Image (cartoon, rainbow, N blue to C red; front, side, top):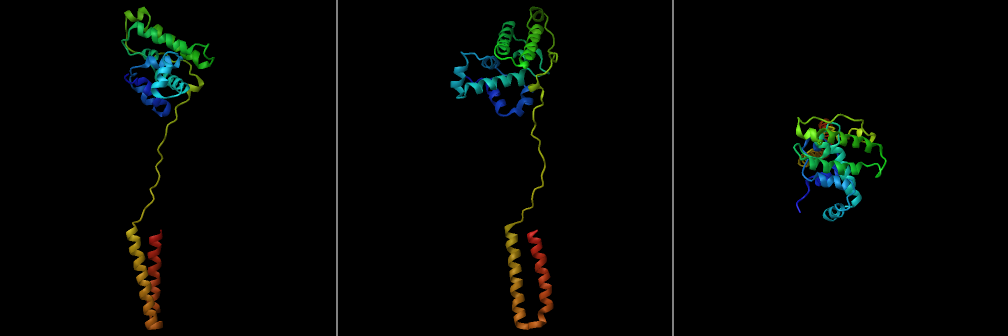
Length: 221
């Protein structure tokens, strides 16, 4: 069986919610009806999908519901997208999608306030493009009228922001080794001079001490 692109998108969106903006800009993929049936708890569809994708039934249903809300029922969606069909779809296809959507949104399943909001939006889309008058006189695709948003859906999606940070300076190990070798050689030379010449080398050793201190500060900074 070929992969259901809509279902794959639903799983991707469940794993990465920040994809919602991208999903909304893209045309609906094939296989949306199966996603709607999964959200509605279709007993014929769910076992086959669970077996095919090796995922828990509760996870599959939640992913399907999330996809419908984010990819189809967002405020700027047009009537066709709300029904989960492409422009030019037949009336029978739109009716089938509408019935499964209303089955999912039926208050007998759960009395969540957002269900009535989405149900009103689905029915309005069906009346606009699915009724016989709308089919006989098609018009340009226009967004559906906005409806009050469910509290859980009205919140803006989180966006991962990039924060620039300074990159720490890394010094070459070869340079460090060369500097330490030079310092060690200078110290050895100073010790030899002090042993051979005694107090006459005091000024030279003082200058060498200053050089060594500056070099170490540069290496360790």
